[in-house]
Length: 491
DNA sequence: GCATGATCATGC
DNA sequence: GCATGATCATGC
Image (cartoon, rainbow, N blue to C red; front, side):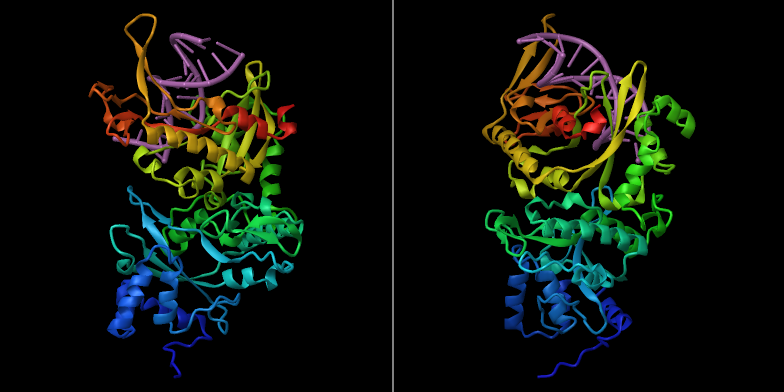
């Protein structure tokens, strides 16, 4: 049977226009519109509603709206038009913010074949240079078939982004060529990442057949990072104008150096200056909470404390202040956890894992010298897979304590009146990478005998057994951060 | 000297 | 109202 397509599959605009007829429909509506017979329909619904059928949403649109059979070859979905179709979720947060629900997977990284050296001729480039983005709202109170499709957008990354993506691409294929695919991590790069693929991490390790057959590496795919997709969603899909200042003034800034070199160069051009000198130079007032961060952003040429590229790349600026003797007092905090969710999480799906593995830091290092702080330099840092695995052990130990029931007891101070509430979480030295600690304005506990400590329950977090404990956050150990700094920053 | 529980203070 | 950069106070 020859199927007549309802659009011109060699014309991107025609594909887009036909795609736009999806807007306002749910996945169920799409099936209905396709006139699928009832008995067949029930099977499709069951299959698509199964959360383990990850590609289900996309397959349904390809097959029942656009009317072509899915393929897993590396060409764009509409080869004659050079358009790739991506069906991808977005979410609306508690405060009304829109964010991408997932990273956008482009294509697998092959360990079987030689890498594609020429970026512009690569499958990655062909697939991401022109994409029809179909965004549906992932509202978890509904079944998958009830999710509404609300945006259809023909998207091409801007020139500057394509250049940064090229630099990311080179970085990834270089590691693969060196037989170091096992060292790949999504945090290594700026917009284009090497994300893990395959549900069970043990099973998804395969030999690096072409470049290092004796070494296994986790299966990975090229992807556009979730942070990047969130920016695209808000700027190009929803067309909101609340954009951030850009570090790049044009693509020329990164023609003869990489984006990373550009960033590091901008900071390092101020090497050896004191906080006082920088303060005067950039007219930043001392005493504010954002003082250190402001200095860093001004050195990058940004007037606010947000930069477009950093939002897209999920890069966080952290100023590190070393003591005169070279030690580091502060640890780095993460958002507080929610115990009820925490006890049910698997490491690789956990909030903390997602945060820690996808985040990259621009560490801007100062060292105290007398009453001043001297700029020692900066470093783009993200955690290695090995250290991530060590963090997992710490995380699991903490999780075990919550599962078994945290022990809480009062310890009175010498005055016999004041007390602190102690707990049996693993101590900081129990794990090289992370520890757990509170991070709130006040304390709040509800003990097993019903006694309440504190005034404001919003500082407490419910334990699985109904008691409440002061909200807790994961922290990267100060000693670990210090160990990760380049030697040149510590001298 | 440092870990740990706690809290201050700012700014989104 | 809350998250988070920053810092404190106690006690081992």
